Every structure is written in structure tokens, then in C-alpha cells.
Length: 190
Picture 1 (cartoon, rainbow, N blue to C red):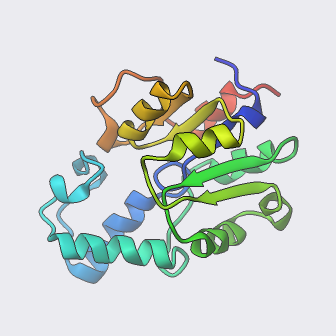
Picture 2: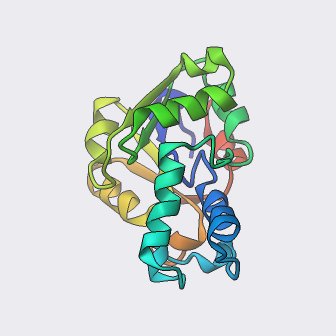
């Protein structure tokens, strides 16, 4: 599959940002839940697969969403390099289910060069289940997301989803997957 760079968009958490690593680290360091690893997160709703009280899960995710920098949220390996390369020829669209725009903007400005940030179109829409509308508005044909349910909805909306492989989406779809940013980069036409 070859994809024009201007026709693909990206989710933030679990695709560009390593939200799982931040969750695991914060659960251990701040709440003493240290007995699980990434492979144990087999559901997008972590409370369904981990023995952590829902209020603790909500506290951790709320901290990540409200101040990604203070929680030490890091980019996924290769994300900064690939997005930076893409912006040399086209804007890059990020559509996130997060409702707060500013913490994402601050995080992007911290990890990406200023000239790259000017070419990132960020949509913080606040819901998982309405991404297709924004993807269509931005005239994208492909979208990379880690939530299997979102990818299945996109496929129904005539958008080609690429599922970013994570433990929580394994065995929950039969869509095309990508396992790394290098794999995404290899699909892009120069």
C-alpha cells in the first residue's frame, strides 16, 4: 500500500504519544500499582483488564490529559522523526479524542521543532466515536488509530484505517495493522 502524505491522519494517544508507558509508570510511582506490564493491558478500557480501582484509573488519565508534560508523557519511537519528515512537504493532521486542546499543543511544542508545529493541524474533538466526520472534513483517506472500535467505525465510513498495534487491539479486528512509525513511513510516497 502506498499513501500520499497529505491523505493520512493520526490519533495522538497510543499512536504518537506513548500513553500506556505513562499510565504504567504513574500507576506504580504515584499509586503503588506496580504488578502489571504493557502486555497486561488487553482492553482499551484498562479497568476491564487490570485490578486497579476505577477512581485511580480516572485520576491517572486525567493527569495525563490535563498536563501531558508534567506527567512525563513521551513520544512513541520514531513518531517525531516521521512527522517532521512529513511536514517538509505537507501539513500533518492529528485528530484526538481528547477534549483539551492546550495540553496537547504544549506537548507538541515541547517535542517537535517550531517549524514542524506550524504545519500540524490539531483537532481535539472530545469523543472517540465521531472521528470520521473530522477525517472527512480534512479530506483524509487514511487514519492511524490504536482503538479497534474507532478503526472499525472508520472502515464503515469509507476511510481506510490502519490499526497501530497495541496489546489492547489484538484479536479485535481484521483490518490492516502497522507496528511502528518506520512501517508507516515506508508506506508513504516520497
